[in-house]
Length: 574
Image: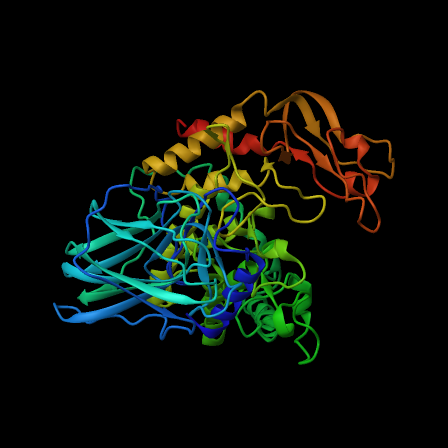
């Protein structure tokens, strides 16, 4: 994990910090692994009152940080020690969040689970097999918070006595039997207080290595004819020179690409300026981004096609020119995309973390940002031009596969459940709890009729495992629900300055979906700016004519969103 990534994860953890030893919110899972290895599918939490006594145990207290974040053992039967921090390879799920609001932790933070019996953390390791000393580094500022560590149906009890305060850390070690090969280790709370704060797990024994958490989905493939994702990345083509001889068009595009490279930031990302910015080179002093993070670092983004379009343009120019500077810039842009992915599998709107405005740090489906990244990665994995040949390295291709799997896992875990029924997704989700999140004052937490379309469409490009098929069919059932659809209605934007115009128009045979629906009911809504905004607005309303004209006509509140995904689903028998 690079230094910039560590800084960013720490900043993100600060935004998510919670007081005390447990989160007060509902128990929800995090899937996590390394920055180049993405999350697994949800692992169920369970507590157990039965446990087998361990052959040995010890506990020691410390207020200082532990040593290195991880050290892998040698294999082939030799003894080794592996320490797994949060968000590293082998760290898979947690019911809670990663925070850094108490001192003394190692790595980038520590795990703060929900205050609930059964709240859990899971790790995955590959071992030679036998007995292993499993040490959990923890802090507990309250009463004892016992837990069960489970692997291969063998349970070991950890007492997790108080350490006096939340900044004093201790280690509790027990000997645990692990089978040869991959083992999932789950630590589950036995009390309503949840687990203590957990900094790391250390496993000592023969041939111990961290294992990947990401789920490999297998199943039949659907026909891709008519899948709406395949036109989503065409924006960059409008940047290509369209007239002149082949040589003249290449020369013009090389000029754009040369200028583009000067605007590329050190982390590899771009801001959402669009192609007009690349009519001239960066002068070395102007801001390369409209957004900044900690210490003034300039942020790249995937908003409004940014970075994805630049990558594709650079790859196109490289394929036609053979000049490696364009390939190297495209590789750098890919590194940006791979690095900015959360360990849980989602992509934020920006990287590094944005300060002062937290919504950009949420996992962002808004305006199809994350879907577009996944479509790009899938295009690269399939070696589809201009992402074929040697545009990316072998290592990058390996990480692309892992990133896609992680993205799928995030999508599956974030699907909104209404009652007991899976539905669709919000435009933004918390990167660790998966909860639907608001963005700007008029973008409230909701079920999104617009942004969920490409999420479903991307899932339909994958092998249809049981988990993926169930998620897709649940989302399609939501789009087909008559209570969700607005029959004989069309959303028509105004063409003049008439502030009495209602964009929701009656039209026989047309079907409209709202952009936003309540989380707990299938009722569409609109939202003006909040009363505290400048200018002030009218807030959430169920009648579009009750929000102020600036938002009524300055935002898209409906459309025939579901039609294209339903048409495609019908064509493949879903």
